[in-house]
Length: 226
Image (cartoon, rainbow, N blue to C red; front, top):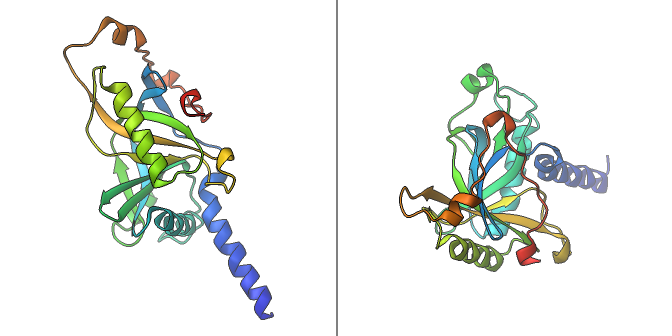
């Protein structure tokens, strides 16, 4: 096999590893608890996830994480198993220049959990349910765009019963695209509900669902940030 053929195979392999996390049509189910303008208050469901930590610029960290997680999902794991994943890919800064990226892993068997390593570049982790304030944005997920979205979230929930408890996290349902106007992403902030001072308007805005009726959250862009 010639040099160019080997390079082509290597490039195709990398592209497959990068895109495997977004090939799945499955999206993690989330309960919509309330809406405040363009911001939705959602409750995620507990489950398993794959995660990895990368240092550096956010875009570069994302590329490295996609390759790591993609290879793991494609069978480069201790059990040699092909794994299902559910979107979104979540990226959060846990320290200056250090990023934690994760993707949900549904239907994990006990045998795989027992065999999976707890150390290394990719780790299997049990996640508790979270309450998030989420906004959808058009464009590319640049650091500036994420900061603007976080500001919009905090402004929207300031007069409500929801209090932010963390920094912004990026949520991707598809890989970033080159034409900015075709891209879309979500930004989320963890929140807790205050037990006092809720207004009648907040109460009327609240929409709850039983778990069997969990709504699958659409990935269309928010009209606020078109």
